[in-house]
Image (cartoon, rainbow, N blue to C red; front, side):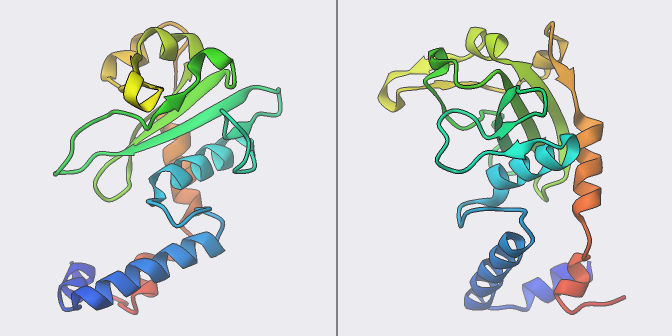
Length: 179
């Protein structure tokens, strides 16, 4: 509660500056790689941390990480919050191009806590996605029934544990609020 009181006392300009500083700190820690919304970068970081995958360079087409066994993972994250409950993952391009073997997907809540995470074979993603012509991509929604599909692995525990391992500095200390 002390954090919310502190944030409520800040001006819009101060909040935006804090947002930018937090983004820089997360980049410095290797959690995010871009100045975009941290959801996708956070998902990539957590899956790689949890499973020891090697994160692909940003320029690699169609996958985000490579497992030690050679499996190529496209990683997606979605933050579900009170203003948008959608579970639609970001665009999946060229799904027929065989660029990835497995979709690693995580749902976060409003405050970026892990709700659910799964490893989904590309065949299931292809079967359960819809092509959207104006974006030239496939739309995939991570519905609860996905976890029941054959070949899907629930990795919620592993991703939640990676999130806890990644927490080396508590937010109250970052904001200068102790106790």
